[in-house]
Length: 180
Image 1 (cartoon, rainbow, N blue to C red):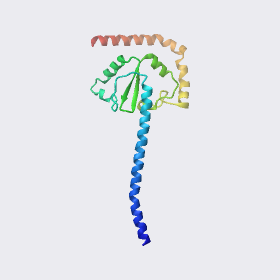
Image 2 (image 1 turned 90 degrees about the vertical axis):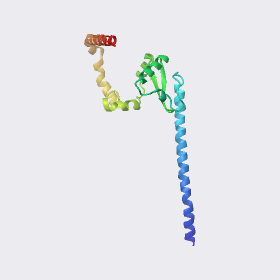
Image 3 (image 1 turned 135 degrees about the horizontal axis):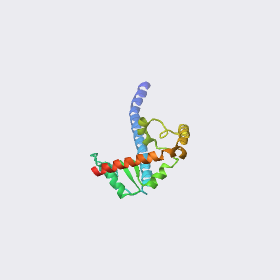
């Protein structure tokens, strides 16, 4: 009889395991949402200094992009409206800062901060693991090998050739622009 009572108590305990699993899932979802909201708040605080086009709270600027070939023109129009930089939101959590003023770009390109992996992940299959995408000791070794090749005295004989090439390219662009 005691074994039967123990078995009944065990069966009655199983639904509690389902409840426990459900509660753990709810806790995990709430935890993840809390992290996402904290990241959104941090992104919004860092982007609030940059004026930009109004965005939807959930979709961001996704509704603005129709994927009909006019998306680049829209970004160029925003670049004229906001002359230094402006944020573009892709949904509620992903934001890219579009920087197009030369002084801002110079500040970023001359920075020694680590490179953003997300941007270079797309280019790495095409350009390989060279100086642009490498890090640490490998980057330092490649940079040390390449630096003497860009010394002023090494490049000085090529100045006239580069100048002539640029002039030819600009002439071609000008004739192409007149034909359009």
